[in-house]
Length: 178
Image 1 (cartoon, rainbow, N blue to C red):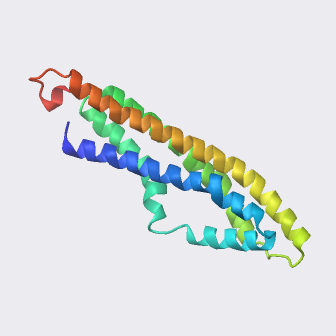
Image 2: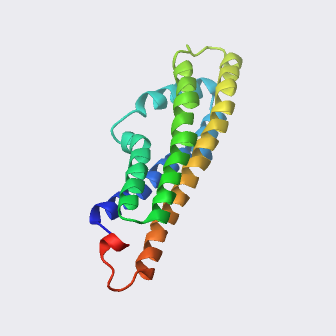
């Protein structure tokens, strides 16, 4: 196998793990913490977090994951690692369709709608706004979390398949024969 192929496959797994961890943190702590807070504070905090998330640290994990997974699939296919290529391709499709696109089509518009809301002084009014936002947002975030976790597991299976390919290759096989 060519070094670029292995590096790209490992980078794909790393990026998949990073984005899964990002979505997972929202599931198991961030949103539960905001749900427990004063709804006016929750709205203001979520507005601030959504305003700051589009940054140079977040971008590689969110935008780079589908690119790295697709590149890995293509490089693996070129190097004749068909099973591993299928796994990375499937991981890329799962992430792109069920995490990336859900974010673009559902979560981001919800975030933008919340950003345009003036936080009411009345706690009950703020509580209703927060409830109407938080509950569906969390459902769709769970879809992103499960999808990105599934993509990570599929990519890991592809990486493990490379190990199986290497062990089953004849001792005198050239890289192009693997």
